[in-house]
Length: 156
Image 1 (cartoon, rainbow, N blue to C red):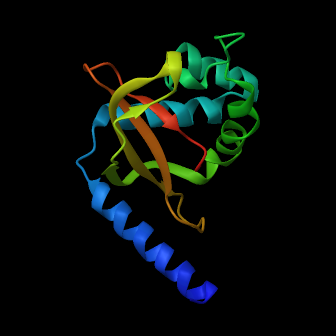
Image 2 (image 1 turned 180 degrees about the horizontal axis):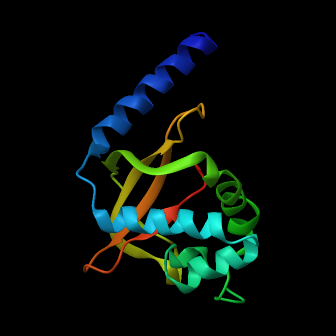
Image 3 (image 1 turned 180 degrees about the vertical axis):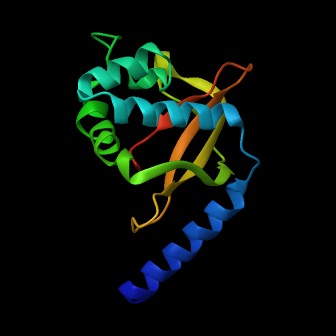
C-alpha cells in the first residue's frame, strides 16, 4: 500500500473515531465566563508572568497548570509554550462562541492533579478581518459540580 493511501486511511479512521466520540453540546455559560476572564487577563496585564499568576489565583485554569515548586504561578512548560502562545494571540479573537463539543474524555490531569469530569471544546471566533479558524479552547467541568476551568488554551 502506498504511503499516500496509508495516510488517507489513517486520516479517515481518525476523523471517524473523533466524530463518533465528540458530539455537539449546548454550551454552559460558566465555561464561557472562564474563557472571557482568561482573555481579559491576557489583554489587560502587560506582564505575561503576572497574567499567569492572576489566572492561577482566580482559579481560571486547571490545577495541573500550576508550578509544583511555586503553586502561585504557572508551571514553566505551560508558561514557555501554550500560555506564551495564548497570551500573544488572544488579541486576534473575540469572546464569541461558534460551537461547543463534548469530547469523550472523562478525566484530566495526572497523579495529584487527576480529576474526573467532562471536557468540552469551545470554539472561539476570530475577530472580523482576521483570517483563520476558530480556536478550540478546552474547558473542564469537574465531577461533583465544582466550577469549570480552562484546561487547554494553546490553540489561541
